[in-house]
Length: 206
Image 1 (spheres, rainbow, N blue to C red):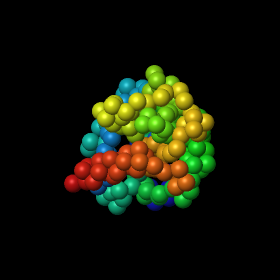
Image 2 (image 1 turned 90 degrees about the vertical axis):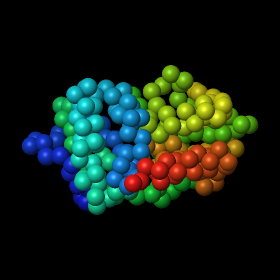
Image 3 (image 1 turned 60 degrees about the vertical axis):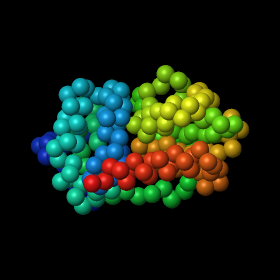
Image 4 (image 1 turned 90 degrees about the horizontal axis):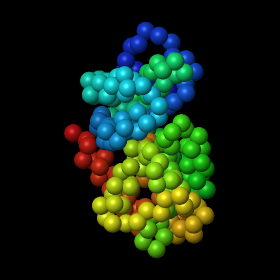
């Protein structure tokens, strides 16, 4: 958490060593992919009461808690005892968005338990490529991309690392940063999805 993060809850305990940190992008003090994020949160192995706690505080206190950073990032930190804290901090865009930097972020995100918050995707010959297996539990942002592909009847080649599949374009799919086309490997598919995500943020704002 940043020093400027604003606590949304007062729990009366000292949080232990973090074992899970979720960072979800806000828009106008609201959470655009709320249901998707909560499904992925549950799949990360947290308890049902903790999922209910997160949902309650998003519904009841997020508006006030995000007043200073309405387009910031909602952070949920869970410690080894299953205790959690929720806060809002400012959003900071990525400083490096070339293909190598995005691929490194995706590899690091695979270390997250059960659900990777960031994944690298690619496009080639009208299909999308993702290294995750077809039955993987997707993050909120990744499930949005998969559903958009399904709606548009765009094939997704699961289990195929886009960095090694000869993809003409690469882009990061992130719960915090949305859809980020690689500056040196941008293309139509990633740019279109990035525009879809931007419209979602705009539509979420009051």
